[in-house]
Image 1 (cartoon, rainbow, N blue to C red):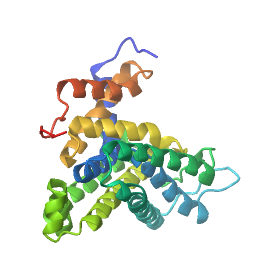
Image 2 (image 1 turned 90 degrees about the horizontal axis):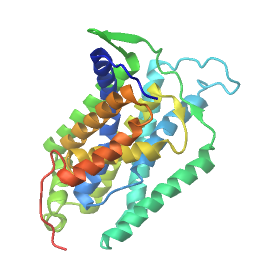
Image 3 (image 1 turned 45 degrees about the vertical axis):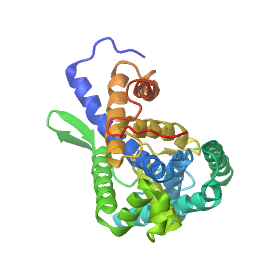
Length: 312
């Protein structure tokens, strides 16, 4: 559907809305970029971890009785239980991420990249279809964590859930950056990323560091899953497919292997999608793939990526 007349206020409003969407893209893109930085592997199952993050926060609320089976208005989840749901989702996704690494990727660490890529696609399909068997293919509706209200930012309106998404995503990204730059496990990640063999010779626990990388990336994806479910509360087992692809585009745009690049790429993609959606909601989803083609043609290393040579 095309809008023939669009004002500058509408464009700025959509750009502001796109920041919250881009924040979620950034959280998921971080997982792609961390795994690629350490293993030179694209973990295409990462979008499904995002999907599982939303489900893992949904079921504790259901078990506690905050999602009635017979319809009707859903009771509001108390503040303390929100933390319980999010922590459970983060822990469960971290375990899933480490399990994927241990069972699917570690045995193929010395295999060809093609074998690892095919395995990643296989794990993605396994999680999609396994989730349909486990959770059912019918949509689930996320619990009501907060009453949706409008927040005035100057001349623009945003919802309180969008503000929550932006704040939580910013805190998570800053926390991750400080963890990687200021802690010993973060130093080990950077050492393994730079040269795995030398890091092993220097006493770094490479296997443990890689497992930790998968765990942290999965935690960030789970946070993204919970945040987007708070704003768009319809859950399906296939919800991670398109979101994962878009987050991968965000990682490539920012420079895959760069955490700040993932954040920048996510924000740019979210804003671009929302602004294009002002004119045409039909083509908003195509923006990500147009951006991917342009990046690969013009600057394959991404905005903040480093250009390097590889011997093949």
